[in-house]
Image (cartoon, rainbow, N blue to C red; front, side, top):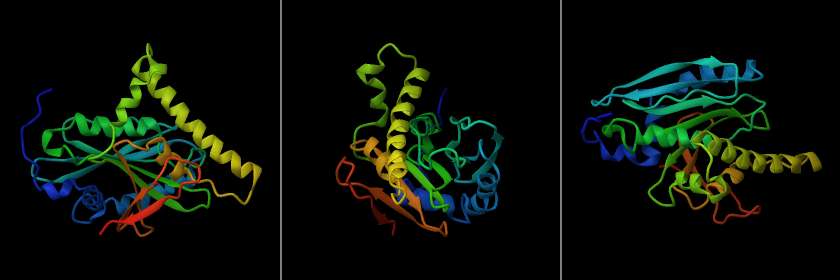
Length: 240
């Protein structure tokens, strides 16, 4: 596929905080009403299955949204290539309220298979409900530091496996980490599972950045941990 060799319309838009704000901006992608007026309802009314939004941007910066058809499985087909640069998907209540490894590979494909003018603009969003019944919106984006997340596909234990088998194996590893965190609540009902920390531990040292929107879906915070340990504290840093 030949990609148009067009410059970024505004280099400032590739800064993670800025590109995520643009997704919520009423004059741009305007995702807030689609999230609060549609995706929340799917989460409330569906015990399983996902829905989502595919987001495109043309060379002049015009953004269009496509509502993804609801799926009866806990998986939403990704769309990438051409002018697609971002995607939003839901998790039903019977799925952990945090990203999977496959979600990060959707981000990878959005970044590397889009038209060149959208390079650096990619993002992958998750709308879910946490264990306290509160709706949350998260995003993963690529940062300019850290090892490429796709390097994990080269794990020696995955040699000889197909790409699909590798994704399934890495999804399984991350899911077992979530399982272990949930088990703590089973043993101690007062414990509040910290899936944000688990995800950050899995991605520690990579180029994946995790962001969380505020309750009003206006601003974002970057979530980080200072060390890869079960006692690490998740620290939010507000986007200015």
